[in-house]
Length: 375
Image (cartoon, rainbow, N blue to C red):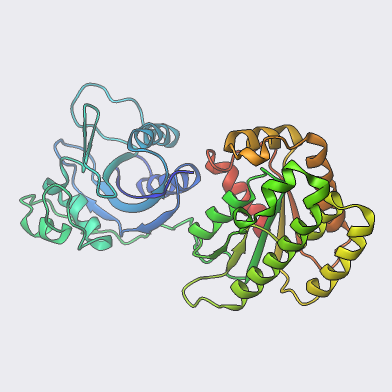
C-alpha cells in the first residue's frame, strides 16, 4: 500500500449550475480519489484570460496514494463525468469544471504534460485567495515564499468576491465516534491488517497490530505442526491477551478510537484446527479464564475471502513460512471463525465478503466496506 500524500487542487466552473458543479466534483473526488481534508470558501471572479461568464473557484486539500500522473488521468475522468467537453484549440474556454493540481506534497515535477507546482499559481488571485484560507504559511517549493506572501505580491487586479454559499465535505473524520474499539478479523491473507491500517489512518484511530512476526514458534509450526502446535497457540494466547489488555487500557487523548487487526477469539479458532482433541480441551480451559476478562469490541468485522483468493494473496506477499499452507487448512480456519461467530450472541459481528473486492486499489470498494461496518 503506497503512502498517502497531501495534494492541493484548484476547482473552477462557469457553466450551468456552478455551485452544483463544484459540489459534484468534491463528491466524485472523495469517491474515486481520496479523503477531502479541507475545503476553502468559494470565490466568484471574472473569467481570466478570455471573455465569458463569471467563475466560481475554490481550493481543496485531499489525501491520495495516486502518483501525480495517475492523478492527472483520474482528474480528466472526473471532469468528463461531471460534464466537461473536450477542449478545442489551445485557448481558454468556458467549462463545467476544471481541476488543476497545485501542489503534491513538496514535490517539484517538470514534465511535458505536467508541472508541479502549477506554473501559474503566483499570477492568479482566484487561486491564491482560497489557498490562503487553508494553507497561508505553506512555502512554495520553488519560489521559497509563503502563499500569504505570494498573494500580497500578486499583480493580478481581478476582483475576487467571497461567495455566499459553502460546499459540503462528504468526508467525516468523526464518523466512527460511536465506537471505542473495532476488531478486524479474517483468514490468513484476507487483508485484515491492511484494512485496519487504512481505517486507523483515515479516521485518526489507535492501531493495534498483532505481533505475530515476533513469535519464534511460527516458522517451526509450519515445518512441524504436530510438535509445535501447542506451544505456538499458548504463546499466541499470552501475547494477544497482554497486548490487547495493555493497548486498549492505555487511552490516547489524541485518537478517536481503537482499531485492531485481530480479536482474542482467534486464538480459540486456530487452536481448534491445529491441536489434537485432548490438547484443545486443556487449551480451552486457559482460554475461557482469559476471555471472560477481555474488553469486547463494539463491532467485530470478519473479512471473508474464498480460498483461491487467499492463496493468491499469500503467494503475493511472499512470506517464506506461509508458502506451504494448504487449501484445506485455510478452509478449516474459515469454518472455525464462522462457527465462533454463530454462537456469540453478545458479539456485534459483521461478516463482509471481500472475495470480489479490491479495497486497496479500488476506493469504491473501500468505501463500500466502511458503509457496511458503520451500518
